[in-house]
Image (cartoon, rainbow, N blue to C red; front, side):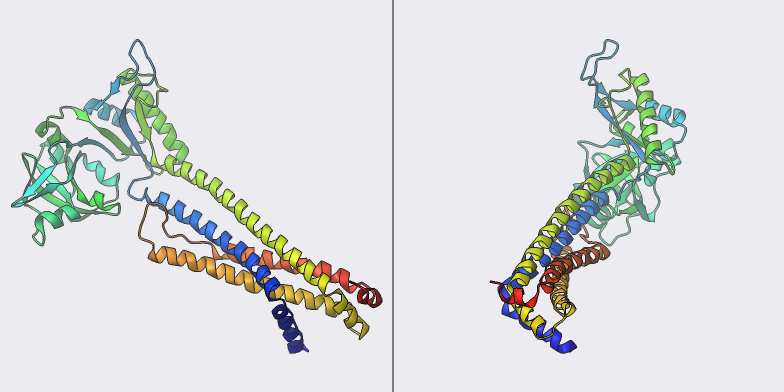
Length: 409
């Protein structure tokens, strides 16, 4: 009886190949699109968060800007610059500063040479605290220290790519290289988990660069960490810094363009909130696609049951029970929707795996994956909907008296 029942179901599906194919396609497409949409949203979010891997999330970054509001007689558009006194004021007045550094960018003198080899590399003049602001990993030698700053030593810490290009297989520690017209002794080599550009950096003491390259007291950027801070604490600290600098540089405390103060943890929080909205939109689109599949299944099952009304009358006339008729239709719907849903889910996961494996690294998607539990749950919901779509029309048909069913046109 069991094998006869399933053989009959398969024969029925085969006899109506077009209808079966359309039903299966609507089910598989709904699950497939949901998996693809969820995977793409996950990949986009992973890529955005990956961009912050190189920076300490509990840090505050202060960049120069221009005033956008008149204040105490000063004109709009006035350039705001920072110096050593501003650096010291922040360190002394902001109570939760942990590690701190300033930056001076060496411009116009970035040609770096050693022996007969030379190239242009980005050079940053920093404090020792810079080691903790970015994911800088010392692989040989050491980083800058307070003695380097105090004595204005001509020392440099070079990135892995710089060491490979200039020194090849030679040991760079202790060797002298030239940055512009100034010679520096290499005291350390570092690696970085960021982009390749971060591995092509050179760090020198900020006090040395201010003298050697005529930067005076200028600092192009100020950064510091604030311990295990929450997003709210980081934003509060950023506001304190802006208010402090407003008093020192004479601009409106609410002029965010005058002192561009930001914190990565707040940026990540905003991005996560944005992706929360994107995920909700993806679910709306995905659920809409599934509902379209459910409607398609329902319509096709209703047509199928309607076409078989006379068949059901014959079955009842020769002794078939309503349960036998209904169970046949339900099993047919169960087989069709579960098989199609499973194929759609596998196809979606396979496409995501192919994208992850063969699409080159890019700025849009990283590790596009989908929670398989969510995909399975959506498939189960669609299967249940398909079963119910077949159950109710079959139940109505099974209740029709055989004589009436046989007269059906």
